[in-house]
Image (cartoon, rainbow, N blue to C red; front, side, top):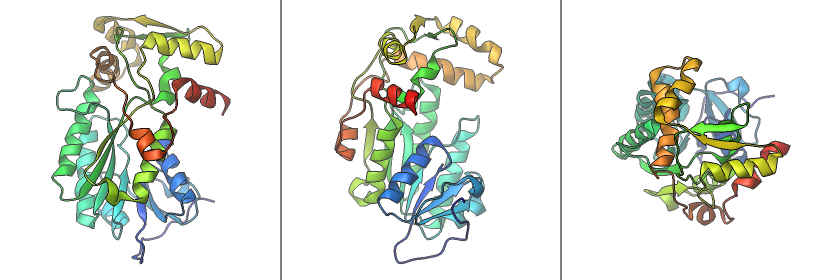
Length: 293
C-alpha cells in the first residue's frame, strides 16, 4: 500500500518535503529520514508509486505545475530538491519549481547539484546546475547545495555489451560517489538544515580514478574482462549517433567524458565523512553491493 495521499496541513512540526521519492536518490533519502523519525511529505508525479514510509504523506506535483507545487509545499519549511530528469527544458522546470517554492513560503532548499557546476563547465548539464543554483541564491530562501560527482552506482553502465568503456576521457580522473553516501549526507543535512545554511558541499568518493582504473576495478569485482578504449570527440559523437538522441543529449553524453579529460571531475573532498560520520565508499564496494543486490 503506497503512502496516503492527502492535502498537506499545518502542524506544530512542519514536515520535510522530499522530491523524487520514486527514484533512486530521492527514495534513499526518504527512507533515511523515516528511519530518523522525521515527518515528511513526498512530492511526486504519481502518488500511487510513492514508497510506504512511517510519517510520510504523498502529494502530487510536477516541477512545471505551479499550482500543484505551491499546494504541495505549503506549510513546509525545508525542501529536498532532486534535480529533474534530463531534458531540453530542465533549467526552465528547475526555475519554475524554485519560484513555486518561494511562493509557498519555503524557507530552505537543499538542492542536488553537480560537481564543478559553473557557467562554462565542460559538462553541459553542469551549466544548468549552476544557473539553477544562481536562481536559488536570488530567491530569498536559504539554501544548501550538494554537488555530487558521477554516481559510482552507474559506472558499470559505462561499459558496452562487449565490455568496453568508450569515450574521450583521456587519462583524466573522476571521484565517483555512492548514491548511498549522498543520501546519508542529505539526510544528515535535512535533519538539521540550519547548521548548513549557505553551504556548498562537493560530494565525492574516497579516490579519483581514471577510466582505465575504473575498468580494472569492474573486471576484478564482476569477474569479467572490462577495458577502457579512448575515443576522439568525433568518434564519440559518431558511435552514439545510432541512438537517435537529440543534439542536447548527445552533447551531454560526450561532454561527460570530455569533462573528465579536462580535469573538472577530479578531486576528493571530505564532505561525505564530515556529514555522515563514516568514510566515503570505494568504487569496488559500491559495485560489489550493486552486483549482489
